[in-house]
Image (cartoon, rainbow, N blue to C red):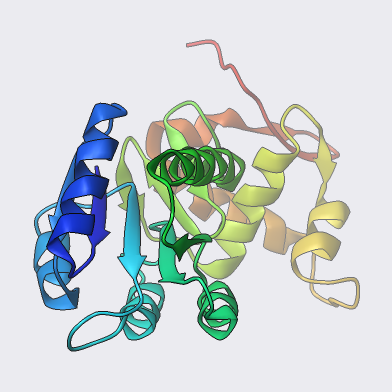
Length: 226
């Protein structure tokens, strides 16, 4: 789903028509108020946002989107006046993913939409790492088990991330201590054992994927028998 926020009816309808003919689902909205109401109903894959809008302008709307944790991930293409370099630069600095200079061709718009969506998919793929039914989202620092968000402390999260990023590699307690607590940490290696215990408990049945290598440390195995 793509949202187009444009107050000019003829331009908005042409954009929506072109997007639909190109295989996308699309909804046209005339201003920021309509956009935020629609966002409560359905999250889009991308927003095409005109800068010159009645009420709040596009830059103010972009700022709100990027400040909201639930909306900040949505890619935004700004539509700007051809002569307004300031608006283009400001929009990109504020987090816009691309821009279209008015008047723009419909095929150029479709090409830019596809390019931004491709980049978004690559970014999402690089952001998420995991094993079995455990997903770690690095940008949000969130961990899901079978689709359910679990509550980890910062050290538990960093421990899990370190093990998952080094799948099938045995990491010593000292390595984990230095990586997570820092090389100047003066505590005991027992700290790692305690955190592994609580982490396994929170992961439930997937805790068994963190294997103890006696006399050395721990390893995250991709496959566990039974």
